[in-house]
Image 1 (cartoon, one colour):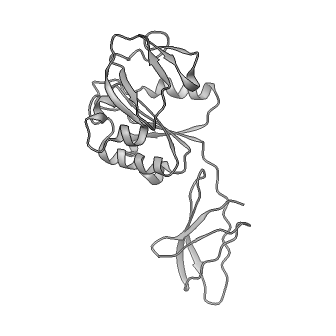
Image 2 (cartoon, rainbow, N blue to C red):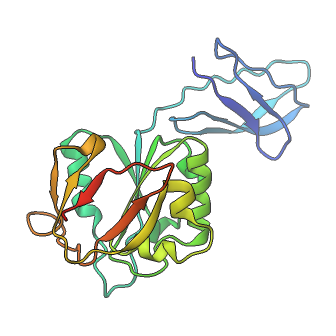
Image 3 (spheres, rainbow, N blue to C red):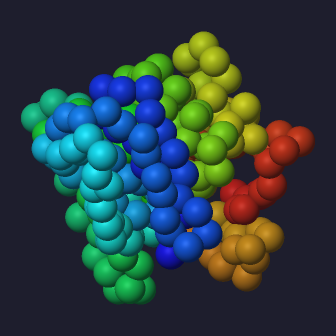
Length: 231
C-alpha cells in the first residue's frame, strides 16, 4: 500500500493513509469530491462521492505511477526563433529508456510547484530564448520544488546570463553556481567528477548546433564542478 494524502475539496478535512493503506474521514451527509495524492503517482479525484447518515461509504483508490522525469518545453519566444529544441532531448531520453512526461508551456502555461512535485527530476528547456527565460513565478515554483527534494536540470542558450540579472539569486541559492560570463571561444569541455573522462563538443555533430555563447559558471561552496572548459 502507498502512503497517501486524502483530502476533501472545499472543506478543511485532510487525512493520511495508515501502513495498510486504510483511511477514515468523518463527514456529514452530502456529496463530495475526494482527492488522493502521493509523490511519484498521478493524483486521483473522485467526484460526487455520496455520504449518507449512519452509513460508511467505502472508496478504494489505485494511483498510477508517474514517469520519473518531467520535460518542461519552455523554448517558445516568438515565431522568429527556433522553438523545437525538445527535438534533440526527447529522442535522447527515448534512446536510453528514460520514461518522461512533456509539459508544453506555450500550450498549458508554466507548471506550478504542485505540477512539478510528483516528479523526481525536472528537465526545463528554454532553447534560444534571450530574455524572460525563467520568469520570477517560474523561479519560485522551482525553488519550492527543489526545497521539497526535487532535482533540476536547466538547458538554454542564454539562460544563465538572463537569470543572473534577476533579483533573488536563483543560480546561487538553488543551484550552487555563479554566472561568470560567456565563453564563445571554447568549443570543448572536459568532464569532472561524475562526468570525468568525457570530452563534450559544443558545436557540430548531430546536435542543435546552437551553442553560440556558452556560459561560464563558477561553483559556489554548495556546488560541485561537473565540467571544465579547455584552457
